[in-house]
Picture 1 (cartoon, rainbow, N blue to C red):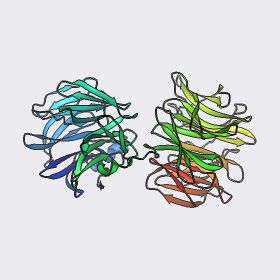
Picture 2: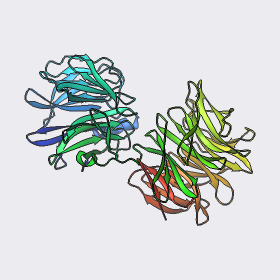
Picture 3: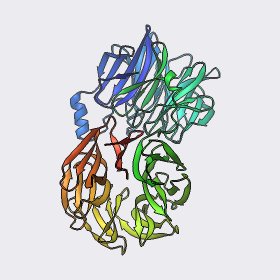
Picture 4: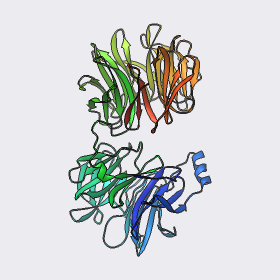
Length: 582
């Protein structure tokens, strides 16, 4: 419906209030300002500068927490409209809406800090009261008239906090990490009821009515938002648009229609028409960030498999864009996916933050195998074949050391392989001179050690050597040939995509510069090419010469990319899986 533009950094907190018939939105940003907007006209009315541009820049340079206001709420007290803002350390202030004059302050009680803290005005009769979050403790109830405050029990870690009327009772709701929503009486601090609405960390919530039906808008830490029925929790609509943490949600009306305004980590505020969204539930698309994509062939047709933070993977028909199967079972973000063939049938291998690695049949979407270890989390590094057997190379952290294991996907045996220096490595499978090898890049090196990118022969377990000079963070790896020999394509955080010769372990060429999220190797018209996903674009390069062939700009930063067997490019961007045809 509308976007309020002007802030230059993340909008960390916001609230709405109606004053003399005009709906005002108050936003606080990491750019050091608090701004008051006329929502209907989308114009800025007032601005308070809490930190100068120089102070903001100094914090960024020194890598300090750049959040100025971690939460805010608007409240009426003694005939005035006040903005109550909370700093990252839990201290708070109350300012008059238009003048910005400070009326009261609340001291912090922690030396820690958090970029997002709750500030909520309970709908209680009597004195004006707000709930203020703490970075390392429970919520506090602050009486704005007397300045007195106390603590709410068992409220540590709550980010999604809101006020609601239920059965004629004024309650506050607390959102927890695993999707639990708790309703409490703010006067007595007693739990009235609780329910589960989703699987992720609830970071923001707001309540309203649509055509006489009580509903709630819920935001999560992965950027997803949902419109749900309040009484049953039934999902009514997915409000897809944010790609990261939803900081706040407020309910208002625009031209007499119900609307929700939400702020995320992208620096803008999104306004949603709830009347329209209530009839627009999408069942096929992912409801959170697409983290990885891979392509293969199923029954003679090209298919893509996507992994998402919505805890699912999905199989797509590349030609039609139709979802063929939903792979459901993981209980946390699905981060990685690969495809192999067992007994002539294609399968998908996925790994998740729930610590498990699972296999699925592409034909019917059924889970067939699962690997997990006690007291640790498995992650998938790469898939390939050893002596004709399909295997997966796994990694897990064991007492501070990351160990790998080879999982035989046919007989399900798991055998130890070798140690690597750090958790969160990325890997790619290749065949070099007839031998199966894996390229492994350490994403998070152990303290005191530099990042290491190297090659290991999986037939005999011997270390082949390092890619000397590749010290940048590697986000993804892909192996293939440039027409002259085997190469590895490394997507780096600062120096573009780099092409390295697997035999000589020397740099061939660099494709672009800056951040690259993902990369893959394929062919166009018989020519080996590389496709890379970077800021706002997907580009195709001649792999041998390093020449840019095509560049396609995207409305959302692409995070994953793969070549389809039929020649299309499959891109994961935001919540979408996109097919690019020539």
